[in-house]
Image 1: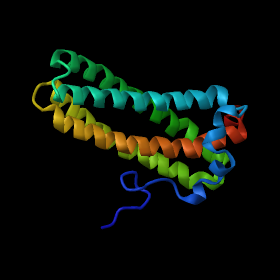
Image 2 (image 1 turned 90 degrees about the vertical axis):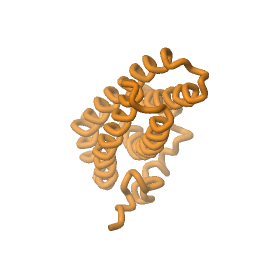
Image 3 (image 1 turned 180 degrees about the horizontal axis):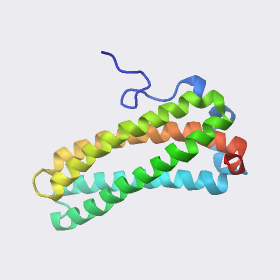
Length: 184
């Protein structure tokens, strides 16, 4: 059985057909666009937070493995940052799935397949988040070593980064084109 080439765990970006607006609104110009402030900036800030949380947990795991971070300092940080990542990511995806993706699909029909891919990613990320949570809980409860957790976090981080980048490439150009008021 072969995996779908657009599956989150195998793809290396969105198909060209879904990047038409990205060509019109390239990343380098986003911050200068009149529709950047507000919703787009907020969305990108949320994504930056998810990236930062995974990076901090990875740095902490590596420091704990190298005995540069005491377990008494590592465990509360893992609990705090891991819990924040899981809860904030679930909430973020729920809002996208129930509100933004349907609205964005309606106003930019040719990109419907892209929003379906992102929705499918969210389901895949739910499973990856469950694995991440199990690995983190293993460390927090003292039954697992930090090394395997680090490997799980690296895997999760790779797929989350792929999803976030593709989501930005698809969604930000739509919002820049239509403006935040076009999302009602």
